[in-house]
Amino acid sequence: MSQGQLQIQVGTRQAPAGFYVEIMRNGPIMLHGGTTIVQQFIMPDESGTSTAYQAGDSYPAKAVVAVCRCGMSKNKPFCDGSHKQIDVNEIDLTETASFQPELTTAELVQGPERSLSDDEKFCAFARFCDAGQRVWNEVQVAGKAAEDLTLHMAHHCPGGRLIVWDNKTQQPIESTEDPSVSLIEDVVQECSGPIMLRGGFPVKSSNGHFYEVRNRQALCRCGQSGNKPFCDGTHASMKFQDGLPNKPNKQGVVW
Image 1: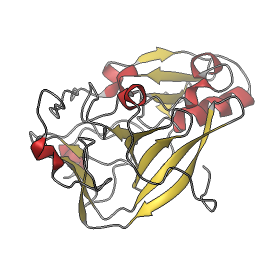
Image 2: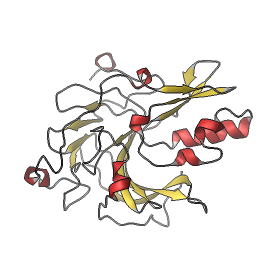
Image 3: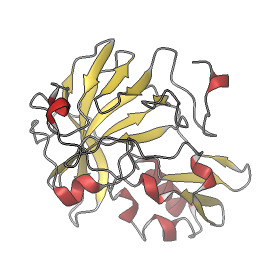
């Protein structure tokens, strides 16, 4: 999987060789590369606005591991074969996401120093964008405080819906990260969210083609997204529960 074979979103550094995700047809998500899976709880402030992630339990790294994406496994986050007994009319795991680069369908909000691209189909309903005056307004406010808050909100967006751009360089402002895999847990909504991938994981479709490689991605694990394999926030309306420990560790690092 050389860089020449993949579409790499501008501002994204592809994960090192061996780190990639494979979507199995009507089956699980195969994680390659040996990345430890860590719960990340969306932590709110006093008003209920999402402000940070805090770590919960972790699950050992393996070279290749099958993760449930139908929502029915009794051994979450791992696959136990439950997808084989699911009626397609109840949970359809067919992929529907486009292979088009995100920026061809994103809207742009212009600000004085920075701008914001927004591709709503990747919304994972984490609500970090609601801080301050909300990210779409905050990016239009001049000053360092507004710029910093805009960047904070966008960088915590798990699905990569929001990207902040430097108006002078016309380049995205993205952090360079090591590959990480997280299970999102939503404290306010009292539900479990998607698998968050950070650090440029290539995602291989069940038909053998690769989606655009993006720095931040969120994969559906409730089985109900309308943009599979990516999350579209449906887990919140259905109150998806993964049955895993539902509180962050006291020792968890907030970021």
